[in-house]
Image (cartoon, rainbow, N blue to C red):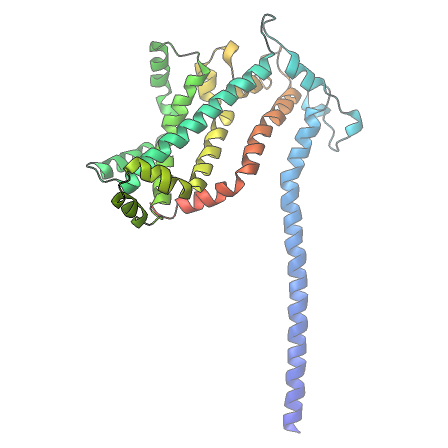
Length: 307
């Protein structure tokens, strides 16, 4: 009798444990979905409101309804963006010209950052030379200072060489400022690759550049993709350098958008046009990130494994 009662008791305990496990998993699932929905709303609601503001007629944010109504949307803000010329003699409107100039800077910055970062990262990861540790330490210290601390010196240098109002030369500043940080990323990534590959190629007569181009380059594509995406985004998000180094006829999109948020600039002030312009500059960044997304995560985490 005692054995039978113990068996029944154990079955009852197991039953309630199973029920408790099922109920717990059910509520945990509900909480998980609730958290995902809340996180999605936090991200999507501002984006939806921004899109609604971009298509709203007027010049004040208070005219944007809390609940978007597509039937009342208008293309007036986009028409102004693509048609307004501060100088009637211009070939294209102000915003498309600023968009093209920013694209040129971004492309030059992407090419320069990836090229020089890969070369310097390869040198510090694979080659032996005197002063390597001191140079690495110097680059690490330089990263502690914000880039705008040297703005006055850079301004004087640009003015001395006559390139102060040249948008494409801004890429030189972006490239030079990105090399220290990106060098550590590339160096850390390359140190995860067995050095025996280099040694085998060297025995076959390959030079250091051939080893980099033929052996290592296909293996470091993830970190190169990460560098390219980061470098492409930089010029689109910068304002300080572009506002100080460029004249109104050569402004970039960030400077153009700032004019629409300045209440003292009554000619351009219109936050709704800012939303429309910001919506347009998101497009190239989203396209690049969409196709290079796997490199963003894999490249950053792998490059940070070894210092």
